[in-house]
Length: 243
Image 1 (cartoon, rainbow, N blue to C red):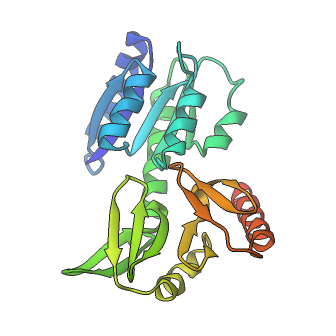
Image 2: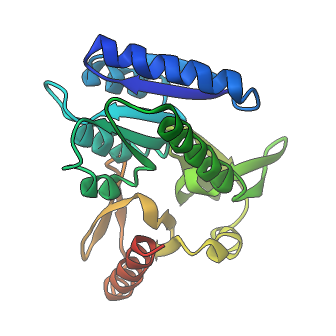
């Protein structure tokens, strides 16, 4: 079941989206929805901190206290990779939606066909991302790890610790070189230091000595590697912009 989060300050607009989502779920039983509604962006962020994110977000652009763009930036800043659809009465913010990798931009009043198309696009993107995973040997068996949820790997005391975007960690005895050999085909992983692998999608700030990750953690950059990682990072992000 997919989780759909609606964050809109006006109750009538929440009711409109909830009705459209209910009809969508009935017409597409293969995509059942569990719907969560918020009128306060701060309450949404508090719940994300406590229990993790949602699969799809529908965010109103204009809200008091925090607008939808800032809310989306905070969701992305915490490593949230859910699909985002913006809702607005104006087209003025459509270009900004690309900055937070939005999947849709709906104009009020929302038409059913537009809503359905935006939802199906989100689900299609999720299915594409879901297919990108690798198998990891852990204590007690094998675990499947989604590539886009892996933020970084740290080598510590003969154990490799994988940090995921939902805040959980996974431990393995596989070596860092073995892990990088598996991950390098995806193009988004880099070795900034002999004890770390990072996912470039979660790098927020790059400096000569360290990387600032989406969750605020600092990852060291080995002496002499800054120039190379800067080139790799800029080329990677430029390539994403044109995909």
